[in-house]
Amino acid sequence: MPKPGDFMPRDHAWQPPALTPDYRTSVARSPRLALHPVQNTLSELIGPVFDGSDVGALDHDLLRNFARPGESPIGERICLQGRVSDENGRPVAHSLVELWQANAGGRYRHVNDSYLAPIDPNFSGCGRTVTDAEGAYSFHTVKPGAYPWQNWSPHWRPAHIHLSLFGAGMAQRLITQCYFEGDPLIAKCPIVNAVPGQVARDRLVATLDLDASVPFDHTVYRFDIVLRGRRATRFENRPEGA
Amino acid sequence: MTMAIAGDDLKETPSQTAGPYVHVGLAPGAAGFKMYDQELGQDIAGPNADGARIRVVGRVLDGDGAAVKDVMIELWQANAHGRYAHPAGGGAVEPGFRGWGRVTPDFETGQWAFDTVKPGAVDGQAPHISFWLVARGINIGLHTRMYFNDDVMAHAADPVLASLAPASRRSTLIASRTEPEGGLVYRFDIRLQGDDETVFFDV
Figure 1: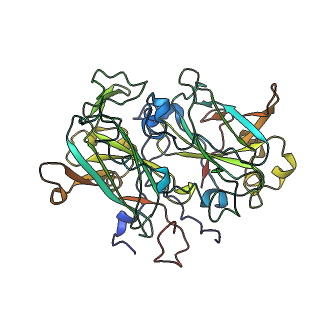
Figure 2 (figure 1 turned 90 degrees about the vertical axis):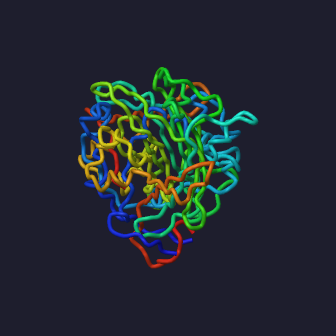
């Protein structure tokens, strides 16, 4: 297999800068020197390969992957689904997608989370899946709750789900957060507002797809994701990673 | 099949911080619960890998010199023969070698450690391990590299190290070998800002 093509440069005016003073923790954790540009080498052009054997049958289903027999997590049942494509519009197929979130009360199953909302014994907040040939992914879960955090002053995070994406090369590696249409906390969140432009921030909001909902079971939220694309588009119709 | 999306919808999805609870999703054992029989990224080289077995230890330090205790680091490396575990990686690798791993520090001390094999030279570059860091307060994942201080000759010919000016910044990417009893250990501390800020790459 020949060496894959270089990635198009990342648009740092679109992505959040390292230092966003309204988000307190970024102040001491942001590099102050400019990122050093490098020509992509094999080390960035490719990355780990995952396949179906890395992922279990229930890993994408947070309603079931930690629930005791006959039980279910508390909360609004939703399906979060979307497609992963690259900047050339090609599907990112057979690529690992991982997810984590708070439970419906806004509490994470994490030794360092001491929020007074309770742990849900039937909910992990952890899931993973692999995209299909068209780049599609789907998770069943409950809608997470908002929760408080200490910024410069006490703040509230809007309800959100964290997503981790691989693509086919380490340079595509991305972690983002997905918010929910209509949440008034989104516009007030310093972490959301680390992203400089409104058009870009709007891309982080999942939209309700009521027509796709399953009556008397769950609603559907759509969240499409775009990873960096490669310069070489000779194989226009070849899925990324294929 | 090309998808019908246009304009700003074709730009990369904006990054958001991984936050303090990244381990829930990517390292649930560290978060305090058992989720999977085998967590991804816990075995970097596998049992059959050729080459020298090494341990790498370090800390990630913030601008105040405090350890970043909630960081999550991913590693990506070639095997001892300079091949990546990938169809375009230069050839077959040993069964069980993935060359990719996840590392989380001790939440009390911020110290982390991982075991692997020393990579070989790859694609005209000196032996190195690629690092990708995410944490609360880091808005977009940081790419850096670790080289080994016993490969001085190879460093002179490495195109990435050679591109760094001033040359003094190269030292921020070079791990120091120590020889405790019975092992090959390299120390690699990463400084997010301040004097000796580690070089981070726009890959």
